[in-house]
Each structure stands twice: as C-alpha cells, then as structure tokens.
Image 1: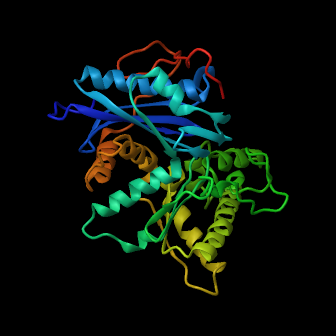
Image 2 (image 1 turned 135 degrees about the vertical axis):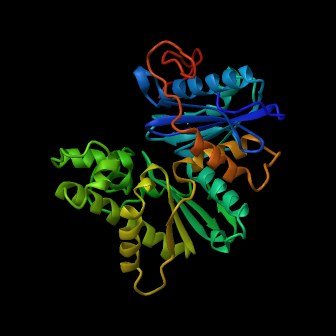
Length: 358
C-alpha cells in the first residue's frame, strides 16, 4: 500500500492495457495513489484478459484492505473501441476481436466498468493537466496526442472537441501505411508506421539487422551516436512518424503535437529529429509545436482513472496530482508466475469460465 490514511474512502481502479504490460492503479478522488500493480500482458502463458482480471482484482483487494471501496473501474485499451457497449471490436496486439470487455469484467466484479480508447484516454488526461496549470494553453484546443509504446496511436482534438470518428476508429495512426511494400505490421498490412516506430518494433528491427550492443529500445536511443545499426533503425522510426504526422498536419492543422507513451522517454533524441523531419515535409506552411508529454507513459492510466469516476468529474488538479503521485511511488509491484506475496499479483489468475481468449 502506498497511500496513508485518508478521509475519503472511495477509489477508482484505473487500468491501462498495453501489448507488453497491463498497468493498474487505485486512485482516490484527489488523484492520490492508494495502490499500484503491473504485469506482463501475456505473462506465464496467460492471455491479455486474464492479466487484466489479475491486476484489477489485486487492486480492489489492496484498496479494501486499506479501508477504501472501489466505486468504478476505468480502462484504457488499444484497438477499435466501442465505449458505449464496452466492446473492443479489434485490437491486433491483444488478439481481440468483438471482445465484450466491459460485460466480462462486470460479471467478474460488482463494480461499474467504463472503457475508452487508450490514446483518447491519454488526451483526456493531457487536457485535464492543462486545465490545472497557471493558464490554459489554447493550443491544446487543436492538438494531436500521440502515445508511442508497444503500439502507435493518436487522439485528435479539433476546436476543443476530442474526435472519435464515425465508427469510433479515429486515431489509428500506427496503421497508416507510409512505406510502400514495407515491413509487415501486426495488423497484416505492410509499411505501417507501427511496423517501424513502436517500442517493440524498434527493438525487433535492431536485432533483425544485426544489432547486438543494445538490449532495449531505451538503449538503442542512447547509442545512436556510436552504433550504426541503432542510428539506422532509429532514423527509420523518425522518418515513418514524420511522414504520418506531416500528413495529419496538412489535413487537421493542429497547433501542437504531443508525444507520449514509453518511447517518449527518449526525450530530445526523438523530439528534435522529429521536429526537423516534419518541418522538412511542411515547407509550404508553418510547423506545429512538437513536444513531449508532461505525463509521459502515464497519460492512458490517468485518463482511465478520470473516466472511472463517471459523472463525478474530478477537479482540475486531479490529473497533475495523479501524475505526481505515480511518479513519486516508483516502480509498480510486478507480477510473476510465483505464488502471491505482499503487493504482488499472482501469475495464475484465469478469466471467467467460458470467456473468449486472445
């Protein structure tokens, strides 16, 4: 448990589902962290849904042990998401198709579940964090929020409105084809941005091209000045992103592009060449600001917490307090295949009987 005794006795459970990890947190109405968990999405042979259930159950139990009642569950998930029905229509990195996530979770736990697209959840958090500042930055009324982790996605804000699209499929930047006859993507197409620029594919391509000095995407970013393979693979990622972002800029005219997700931790190693590459493709017009998210890889989790409160919208300071609380808590306890110990999610939790598997 992270949170000290507190007068408020309710929390929401926020879950951010990624293709590599499932992150979760129990957060009170002020944005203060009560408990935190993480697990590998496909750890110890589990499917993605089983990992979501494992983390959620553990957080509900930890909150209850600390005297808090879970009043809602908010989920940020990749893919084509129907928030009204709580269904993930398609998520390539999770192996889900027409997956009734809300229905299954509400059958598991007596708590109301709300589900949203991961990039749009990150955008909700970014906009909320702006509201809590000394003065709202009106550039965020026309913005692209780009989380880059295992996948690559986008949230579109136009005229202050977060755009979902006609079929709630807006923002699938990662599956924009930018390299003709290019690398195979997890969606089955060739040449998608995600096939070059996600955290997973950067490392995969580095290894495929003979790279041996770096063992993680972070290490690749740190070694581009000394490792030719790292420099080439990183350059390919920047190029793919720049093609996509310059195209979106030409169509949508954003004032700011915000890069979040785990890959954004590379900082100026990513942002500086990306600014230059986008500007080179927009010589006929001004280039929008391109900056790193203040929330980093936590935007989706914080957005999930916000929707978890449903109509009880937290105040403007919630997102920033949640970000500070998550940052100060350090790394979340990580589950494994070992038996349950304090603060650890067991690796053996399974989904409901008859639940579809990824």
